[in-house]
Amino acid sequence: MLRMQSKLVMEVCVRTNLPALRRQRKLSQEELAQAVGVTRQTITSIEVGKYTASLPLAYKLARYFGMTIEEVFDFSDGEG
Amino acid sequence: MEEFAKTLRAKQMWLSGGMLTIVAVAVVTRLVVRPAGRWADFIAGFQVGVALGVVGFMAFHVVRYSLARRDPVRLQRLQAAARDERTLLIHQSAGSTGVAVVVFAFAGATVVAGNFNATVFFTLMAATVFVGLVVVAFKVYYAHRY
Image 1 (cartoon, rainbow over the protein chains, first blue to last red):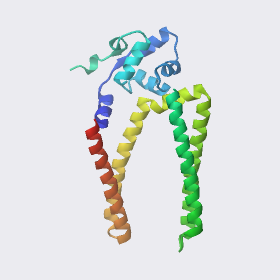
Image 2: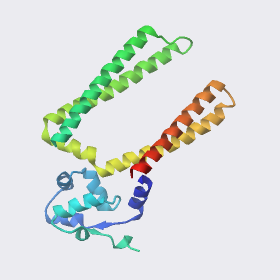
Image 3: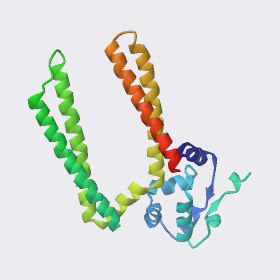
Image 4: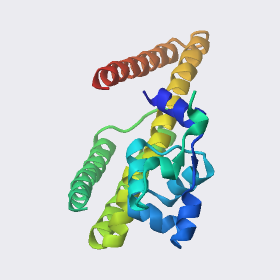
């Protein structure tokens, strides 16, 4: 389970427009992290593509910006 | 948030109990059993060092949790850090990789020790088997859980 999860995290490259969304709303990484209940480092890792957010976190982030998950994250690279 | 504060309180109590137990065990063992032989001083020093280190670590967390329970901002930060999914993934990955490395290192050390000392050989063998069994037990447990 964990190995599979780690592998998925490494293999699935999910692009995100979180930085742009944050800039639009003049939000810092720290503020966004606090709003969705994670650390600033997690937001940084998601933004640079080092870490893929879990479905609940992706949902929280999307809901925070009033968007759908697909509008915040681009999964097109992971589609077969 | 209140739920997390309660969890911290419970952790604080466990840690405080653990600190008292360690101090009591350390004092009693120092009074009753004293290491003897060539390495007695080193062993005694190591025992005291480990006890102090563990108690210090526990005391640090007791203070940290106590401060967090009094300050909502600290509490929120601590909660985010404790439940952060990336941090949990890092801990899980480091733990499973670390245990795998330890098992292989112990197995190698057991083979080498067999050529020199039977006591060390059997001690390492027991440790290797124990760690291996623990890993297998957890794998079976989590395979049924998920």
